[in-house]
Length: 408
Ligand code: SF4
Image (cartoon, rainbow, N blue to C red; front, side, top):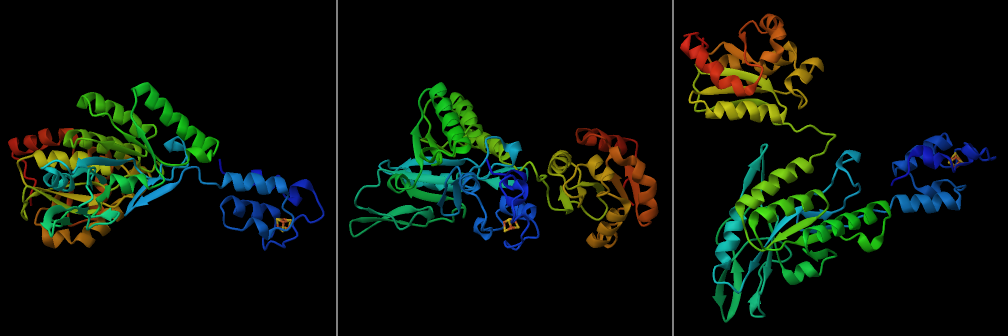
């Protein structure tokens, strides 16, 4: 564990009431300031000529990185510092890799299929991170190096070359198994579940808590190619605790989509909210008379509302107000979703001139804002919507049935 400023301070002359206490020779006004800076690694430990050997040893141990970071192109593997996400955050999501056997006749199609696979979750698009080629014989010359590129094969003077015949995703990497083995990775063949689980946990605990260098290599688990449901359950566990990469023999879109969803939830930074871009979103080809909904830019709020609007068979707009990624009620109480902010944002989007509709449906949770909103934005009339996004469909039907005019 990294030392805190107070833990460091205990070793300084000021804490020990020695003659050089707060002497400023390090450039800091006090030993406490030096300690705080050292804890954040903002000052060199040698700036203080009076550092004791015990502090030097404990500090150098505390700043050692417990797990190495291995780079393959843009892909980073490992580099974790904590056992639990809430302690700080996890750094690099578990990489998902698929093996392609180049001795099989359909291998080029398989590479193409893997490279084209995309899965979108909470507004972000993901895919397979790494393709690992096996059985690339001596006659095969790979035109790509360690790094990105997906290829199909053609023959030239007896040598097989790989060349691009389609546009791959630009965030996928391809390596031969030999290239992968040269990296400082711990490649572990999956045993039975209990053995693998224990191995992963013990290795990570030793790396993080004991800073055991023999456990500092990121761990890649080569999954057994058995029943897909069992494989999915085991891989899900290893992804949480504590595989840095999972390697699959077969390419299965459902398995990978499930793991990508799980991974996206585990590897978000708990200190940052998930948010989407603010702006005007359109559903089912709206025109200038279509209904308008409004909510905040908290990702889960956005996707809940967007999903309902997508599935309605009426055209609609959704205004996403910038609210520091907070949900509606939180943003309202934190004053990041206020009539002033809404008014400014409507002007910024130029809604008044772009759309003829003058009624804007706001979340029912903030119906108390309606009076102030109407006063602040005199060009519009704000209408109380539903408290829950799942009721939007019923809400819209009710309006249509009762012939209430939402537009104009
Ligand atoms: Fe304290 Fe800095 Fe003087 Fe060291 S050099 S004794 S840390 S004030």
